[in-house]
Image (tube, rainbow, N blue to C red; front, top):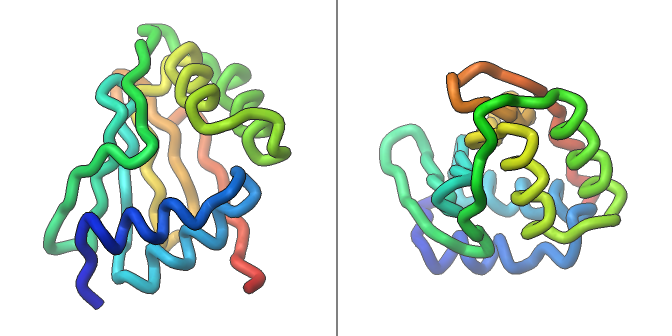
Length: 132
């Protein structure tokens, strides 16, 4: 299935809170998306199906990224987001403070890798299965 900015936006805006992330991932997979990156200092997503890439802002907001990464800092932010304690803008801020330059959601492997400014993996989290 072909994806475009409009179809990505429709899926992305179906998320009411971080607990809906598996639903959103399921929707992206239905569009044929295999991976996406979120670039913290630019506040943009880059979606790809392996052949084409689409860059879009969606709900992204550029945030400063610290040079020094903190595994504890990003793990704490992930835990807060997964439990619904924070909204996405706060998560981006905390990720930047933890030195996360970008994260990659691999929808084939069903995992998210959080990367520092030197492209080192700091944390890898499984994407929970969608139970829809």
